[in-house]
Image (cartoon, helix red, strand yellow):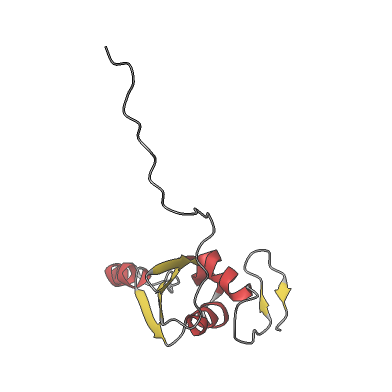
Length: 125
């Protein structure tokens, strides 16, 4: 009786890292925002109201840096949580977009904006 089992070697896939790949600010990007802010309307307009509440806004940008800037500097603060940035097939949402803006690698000048995390103001660089 043979008590040895065949030896199976684990597949070697190279080094594994938990860190995401660096964001390429020069790559084309798309920004999707769910418009959750609507004015109160009468009950007769309820169907139209529900359609507007779930409206999706789409914008295309020549660079990821411009898309990040638009999301942080131009969108109302309440919209960031419902915003998705797509660049090079990768999705970045909400707080991640804020992190891309505050990153040392962000290539564009920043303006002073309220911090979306704790309400404090950040100054431009």
